[in-house]
Length: 256
Image (cartoon, rainbow, N blue to C red):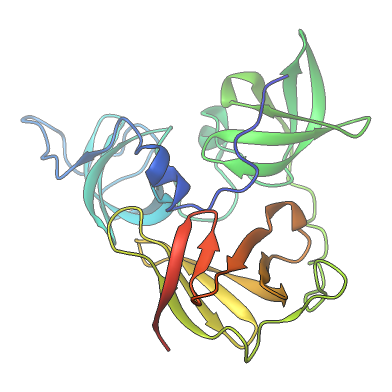
C-alpha cells in the first residue's frame, strides 16, 4: 500500500519548498514550427481557460499557444509551458472522458484501484495533483497514482458541509479581537502571509490565492481549523514578543 503525501500541505508554500515541477519552463518561448491554435493533446485550443499544476498548486490559466501536448499558458504569476496531462486539466466541472482516461479525477469519484495485486472499488476522498487518496471497504485507505486507478462511476453527492463555529478542542475560544491583522515573514518564493480578521484566518500564497480558515486559541496556542477536516489543522504558537511560530516558519505582524 502506497504511503500518502503529507497530510497537511498548503499549496503555494510546501510545494515551493519541496521544489517546482521539473517540466516548468518559466519564460520559455514557443519552439520554431509549433502549430499555434490547433486543438491537440488534451483537446484544448488557444483562448481556452484551464487549470495548470505549479509549485503553488493548481491555478487558473489561459492558453496562449499549442504545441502537441504542450500548452503555453498565461497565469497570474507569468507565462509558462505546461504538459498535458500531468500539468493541464479543465478549468472546472467534471473531468472529461479524455481527462479521466489520462488520470484526472475529482472528489467522490467511484474508482477501481490496484492494491496488493488485485483491483478494489473505492471512493476518492483527497486529491493532490495526480495523486489520490481512496477510501476502501473495511475502513481502509490508500494513495495511488493514475497508473493504478480506473474510473468506475460518476461522482457521488458531496456530503453536507460540516458546521462551522465549533472549537476543534474543548476550552478553545475564537481569536476574534485577540489576534487581528496581517502577519508575514520576509518575501520570496517561501513567503508566508496570514491575515487574521474577526475570528477567521486567510492563508495567502504568492500567487494571490488564499484559503479562509477558522481561528481558535487557548493561552499561547492557536489552531487554524477547517470544519470537518481536523486532520489538516494548523497549530501555531504565540511567542513572548508577539511573533507567531507556524509550521511554515516564524511570522510577525506587518499591518492591520
